[in-house]
Structure formats: C-alpha cells, structure tokens
Amino acid sequence: MTRPRIAIASDHAGVRLKEALGRHLAAKGYPVEDLGTDSGAPVDYPLVIRPAAEAVAEGRCDLGIVLGGSGNGEAIVANKVRSIRCAVCWSVESAALAKAHNDANVIALGARMVSEEAATAIVDAWLEAEFEGGRHRRRIEQIAEQERR
Image (cartoon, rainbow, N blue to C red):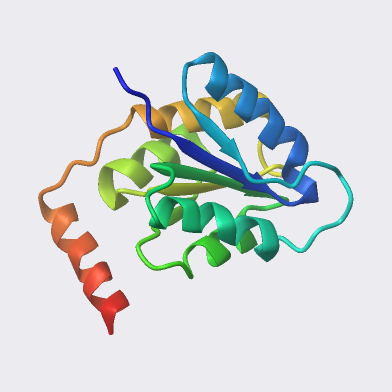
C-alpha cells in the first residue's frame, strides 16, 4: 500500500508538535516533507504555511498538515491557495468529518489547543477517513466553481 506524501509546516508555536507528528507519521510509513520552521524563534506563519499548501496544490505532496498556536491563521493562509481545502481540527470527530464531508486535503492544528496525544489521534483519524462523495461531492464542486470566478 502506497502511503500519501504529507507536507508539514508550522510557525514557532507549533514546531515541537510538528516534529512529534513528523516522527509519528514516518514511523507509520508516511513520506513526510517538513517545510519548517525548525526552531522556536519567532517567524511569520504565512512564510512557512503557504509553501506547504502549495506543495499539495501543485501535487508534490498529496496532503498537508499545518500548525500554529491556534491553527486558525494557518488555515486562513492555506485556504488562500487554489484547490486547498484546509480544516481546523480540534478532535478526532472534527478530523474525520473534515475528510468525509469536506474532502480536506490539508488540516490545521493548534499546538496551544490540543495535546500531542490528541493531535496524533486527530491526524490518524483524518488519514484513515475516506471522502463519502454523494451530496458532499456536489458541494466540493460548488466550492471549486466559486474559486474559478
């Protein structure tokens, strides 16, 4: 089974959680492209988050995970990139629904909002979930149509 390639990026607030998730994903056989940041030194999150979203949009990676203090700013930046559907996830259920209903190809996590244990479970739930299609596909197509305008 070929695992999807995952882009991962964070600002300074999310760097420790990013590194922990990167190790977790690698241990499960996922190829991970770490796009920074690599320290706790302050960094403007758009500078590291946008390249991760672009890696997914351009097909260099299949999925993406972006992290910051709350995950909100990171999701806003990711969603500015055409074809990205980034959901802020705070629970296993929110992550599973992000994939099942919204076909989220990127998720955002808040390192100040969830523990490492919770973040790992959230990421696993998102990766294991499948897009349901049906009425949800119609809505995703409507989003894509609005994006083209």
